[in-house]
Length: 441
Image (cartoon, rainbow, N blue to C red; front, side, top):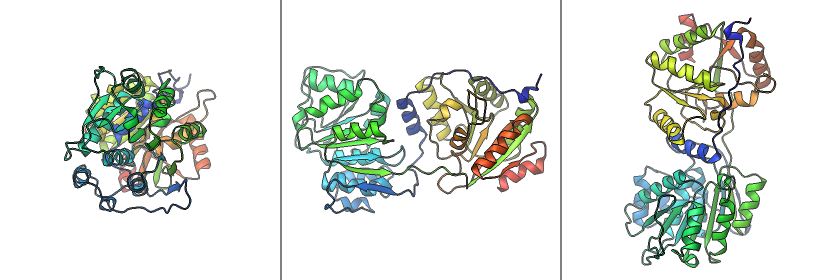
């Protein structure tokens, strides 16, 4: 019988989070705008229309109260996508399709553009912003109210589950909610005169079309809008399905694409630690944690069982540990992410499944407590390995990856070195001097 350390843990099936849940988690984990250096690709519907960008918010000639709100939120200068998108949205008032990942400032961009179009002398809805879930809609609602706090004439209504609906006409100027509830309010109860809507925003469109009914509901509202209504669509991805939906619902639109940050191992120093049993594996990790100051650490396990075991052991040893897996509720997962983001917990443990949809940018160390393997063959999963350790070493910063392996898994380490062309150094976790060199790297 092989030693425990050589056994491959049998994956335990867990409930995969939806795209909407992943999107919400990514919003929770962001500490600030991504400091991306990626290029913005712009495709103008009218090639004769000159393209220009801004370097300050003052160039937009915004209402002073809105400008004050922007600065009060901590935006000192436009983000990469805001530099290009805001002139199109505010000055040109063009329809726009934008592809951009979470954390790039897209929400602030479409909220600012929407608020700038409100005529405060008129007490009726002029802006509709749709998001695929209640939780995401609440986040946008909070951003919008904060940005407009120095302009109280702009009023807001959350149109989502739990919010009352009656046959009375609404007077709030900005409506933010989910597609189903918005359809009921606008088309069934007639709370809104859709012919007076100036701006229509669809956020998280890739999540929207993944949710049953939302695509059709969004189109139903769209058909009742005036011809001069400005329509904005934002999506983290832009595949063929999104492209078709976007071009159907947003006519004659400019297209902006912010390339995703390329995953690279160039800034990541990789190590592996050979252990002969589960107990020895844990002692090795405890030695590392007890010897050096390692900052925010993300630990990946292959199964719920190993993740739960590790979380209990580390907590018992006095470490501040968070745990996320597919069995937790949305609220429980988001609390764990928020605690990690705020530094209340220095260690976050995740199963393999959960890791695939979460983008985290402030991690300094990644630990593979179990190497990722393909369920069907048991072979090393190179794509998941890249995704896991790519959570560190981002945006030009140095990162550290530590792989805890059994003797029989050395061949997998060799395969990773050969495939990625990057060295993975052996680390003796019983040697104090060997561990201390981690901090030097």
